[in-house]
Each structure stands twice: as structure tokens, then as C-alpha cells.
Amino acid sequence: MLITVHLRYEIDPDKITDFEEYGRRWIRLVNRFGGDHHGYFLPGEGDSDIAYALFSFPSMAQYEQYRTGSMTDPECQEAFELARTTQCIRRYERRFLRPLS
Image 1 (cartoon, one colour):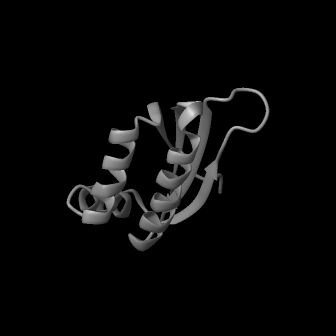
Image 2 (image 1 turned 120 degrees about the vertical axis):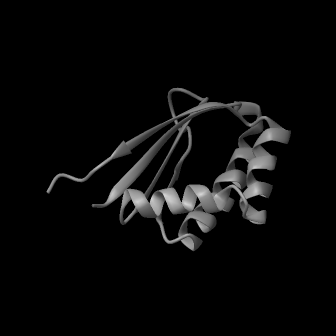
């Protein structure tokens, strides 16, 4: 069953450029791991410190393979390190969604 991951980020608005770079990396990485990244959605009007991301995997098992693989993949580790060193992400929440069929 298709699973979509919805991420809600609280970001540092003064570090939006760093967050954009982080997002660009993860779009490519999720797709490389067999997912379908639907994009990052950055603040426009309203809250200046909230961003979202959505991506899907064909199944929860494939999502878990991605999660396990990302822990040792050098490019994924570089993306994690970018967020850690720049502190562009203050916190995030992850939700799992399924399509209505």
C-alpha cells in the first residue's frame, strides 16, 4: 500500500537558504532510494518559520529500507550534517498518510 510521509518543519527564517539546500538534497536522495518526492513547500505569506515536505514510497517496507539505508549512505549523512551544523531546522514532525481508495 502506498505510504506518503508528511513533514512539518519549524525552521529558522534567517537560515532559509540553508534549508533550501537541505531540501534540494533530500528531493534527489528520496528519489534515488526509490521514493517519489513531491517537493518542499516554503513559507510564503503568514508564518515565516513553517515549511512542509511530502514524499511517497510504494509501501511501508520500502520506506523502512530507505530509512535504514539513509543512516549509512554518505550523501544522506552529509545532508543530516548540513542541518546539524547550520541549525536551519528547529524541530520537525512526521506523519504517515495513505490515499483514499
